[in-house]
Image 1 (tube, rainbow, N blue to C red):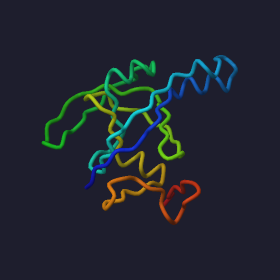
Image 2: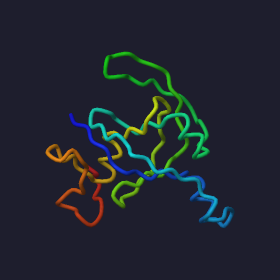
Image 3: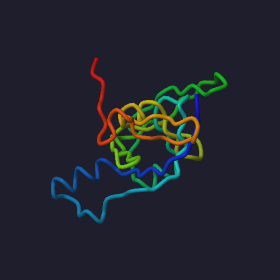
Image 4: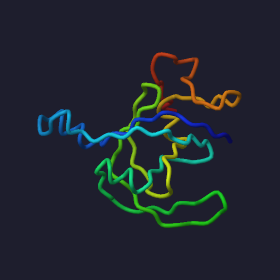
Length: 137
């Protein structure tokens, strides 16, 4: 397991869809830049309540989250958020908890980013430096 930080742009994915459909002006898309905690021991993306509110993300359900110490808690889940790290973008629902943006394994896998243990950062997979390649089997 490892931990690092990465500049991450979060955007309301519904807003982006409304722009594509001509129902929202591009300057009205809600976005947030975070110095995200990259945690390879975490599964998905976690957003604190204040970020969810800034992005205008709706709560679509709840999930059980398991913390590192074994505790379980029921937490809210958001509608899709667009996640951009190192110019690579994916969309995921987020868990709502804590006080910082945490990015876990599913985002790293989808973006084809690797954890550089020596320099404590994420880097594009050297086998695919120009764009993410997703494994399908």
